[in-house]
Length: 104
Image (cartoon, rainbow, N blue to C red; front, side, top):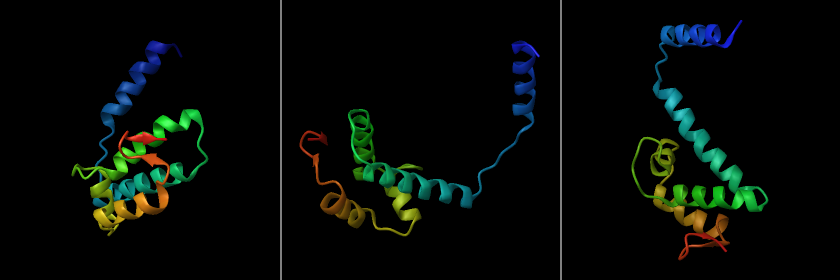
């Protein structure tokens, strides 16, 4: 099968797929986003991980309200966003320089 045939077949298959997200699907994705972010932060740091960890910290500490913001993900899990961010600052994110917005 050549690449043109594969592209045509994939396009045909994607056109026939009609996937609808359920409320449960969205809830599970929000839970996994928080779990993955916290798991990643718990890993040992390396130079490559530093940039990603900085981005995760900013996402976790953000108070913006969007469909997959940390605030909405926390609420989806029954957690208070303000209390969770306070806990993260105190116990999880100790080596983060909040003035510079990055790990020290």
